[in-house]
Length: 271
Image (cartoon, rainbow, N blue to C red; front, side, top):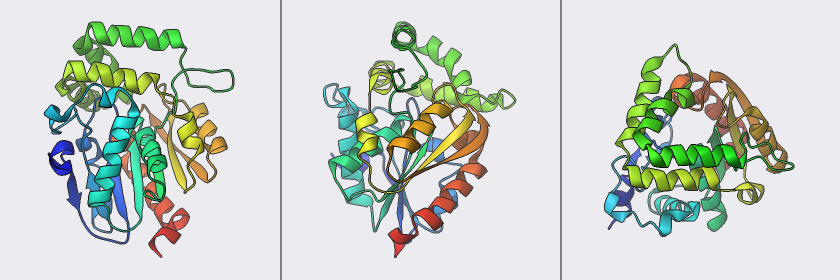
């Protein structure tokens, strides 16, 4: 099976950099439709669906391989090696950003910089880490999700999206969740909410941009501040936004922040 078919890879544009866009839990590459076109005219862009999501080849799903983020990270390495040209900037949302960090560490030098939208290396509070949830919170969330995935999706998606004045966004996220195979979604949820990628982000050496919503209960601001403290070259931009998906609810602000990052922080990559 080809990498293109497995991950429904879509390549657009040409330019001095390749931007690879990765979606988060329960989503697919369509979630980047308001942001990616702004860059396709100036750069090469690569969109893909994680196996089990969107229009990926579900027959490629292997429960053992994808029981940890490492399986998704290995796919990302293969996607970049086949479709990346020139320096690569990885633009990842939520758990997609963490898969990108792991991919960078699996293949040093493959990814030159990261733009992380709503990232969280761990959702569970630790002694010196403010993940936002207790282990009991996460266990309860996963139990509800596993017992009634469609019901959980309908209840949680609008809260994750925020922006109640734009109910169509919450409905879109609900629909995206509900289109994912429930069994795969349940397994991916455990990977997402129980993974601990703190060691992975500390190893990143290239420039990193954290796009942080001002009000995001999934990845609170304290998590973004943690990342700026442990990543060697990291800056955070706070976007005035309620919810975990500013690339849908505040796309112009995301585009501006990423473009500024590319022009200034990552200027050396295109030299």
